[in-house]
Image (cartoon, rainbow, N blue to C red):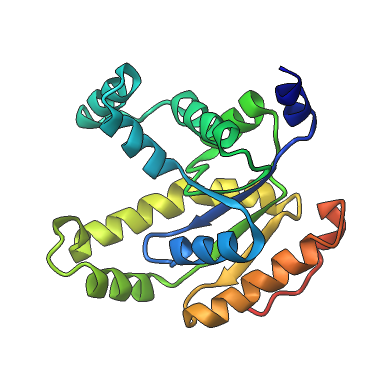
Length: 210
């Protein structure tokens, strides 16, 4: 019990990682985990794992997805919260979430944590298309129309979230069209600077090469 209380008192550090399909954010998250000791949580992976577990909750999620319904924010947030508690860590990269404003508001209301900052991997649509087509030859959901639709949905739903945090000075935009190593150099400079400050507010004037 006491261990739980102390974990709650020390609020975990959360970094939201956003970027369109093919922006390379998964690779960068793996690098951040290795270099800075964060736990990487992907909202999509947690939902898929819950479905595969065959639990009652998983069956409900699967039915909703099959019927074309949007999984309620609370469901995803509970999975994130459980994964955070089970990890034993106190710093997290949450990847591909919040997908929209409703996700964002629900996360802050339910978990009562504001993110330290947001990493936004910016990549031109043409480059994302090129990467996805090269990477997934023969995958049915990666034809050009499907990719463009995914990109459009990402922009329409995520940009209000980016704008919200941008107004608070919490968004680092990273040029993700460059080689992986160059992108990670920018990422490293952010994490190196931020960890030297107890209050992230002071750290957000870091200039990142775009």
